[in-house]
Length: 427
Image (tube, rainbow, N blue to C red; front, top):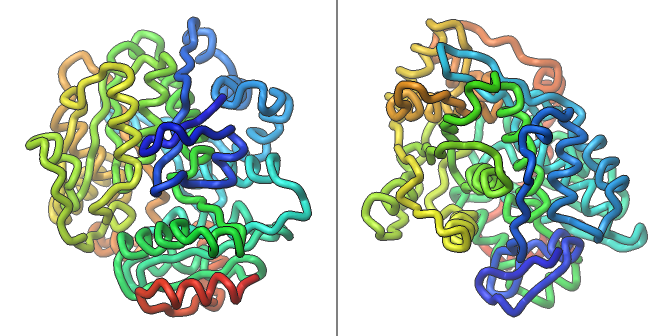
């Protein structure tokens, strides 16, 4: 399958090129030239997670990689479940935090690592440069850790991610280099974009991105939407409403791509915190990003979501009106209230999932089945959740291990020349 640059449509690349390149000219995102559709979705939903995911991903990759190769990539990437759990009548949590870094980014990060390995010569040197608002960094770091020919540089906003998030990916060393930038996530993302715009630098260090802008990460996320619906009783599958906690909007893009493949989803809800560029845009038609506000749902502290153009591209091609998307924004105070309500109902959550749950409950109609995404384990936000709920959260083994280790990050001014020096230094 060919993918095209949605900013400059004449730039068309293969799956392998898109994975290796990350971004197109003029910082354009790659998007599939064909949108496959499954005729028998019920039969697909009856398959196991690995077999189904292999078929979904092969529908996009096509003959570029043999299906046996794709299956091996999926088996290596998806070594953990994505279960749904009933929170109350007709409302289910999709738990995406059972991977090695306890967040949904494990699915995309690990599949991207497998994809890059499959399309790269073993003697070629690659530098992964990515920005994180919390969970991406850990998923990418652990997915690529120890790969001999791949260096990883991860930028994150200093003091603006949780201490446990920081410990999980800033303690590895070896080929993983972590950089605390004096700024917010949008500043980190802007530095990544500047780097890719510098053709000389990109060639010199073999630059690639593992953000959700990389198409392989996005494609992997499609798979767990199918896995979620497959676990619902058959009689509840035709009126499913899915609420997606949204920051950079890769997760919602993947969900809409799942719908385009034939997954029976009635509608999606874009749930944000007070960094509500998209909900306001859907309301007014005006794209007006504001200064990013730090919140307790820090992975969603994004005012200029990179993946939104893909959503508009998909909807335009399929004739879907953006007005069909649900939307809503939640304050920290409301997030805290919702966490308490969920805890009293017997479900321990964290701020991102609580936002999706709250807006879902506000907009779910009688007869509909609600599904909301839980994108991280509550222990990754231990301090915040404990402060709100007043009880202790035991650290899972991966967090306990890394929490006892020394931080290896270096500090960096929000300056492109300083970043270039770091990228050259790690080679």
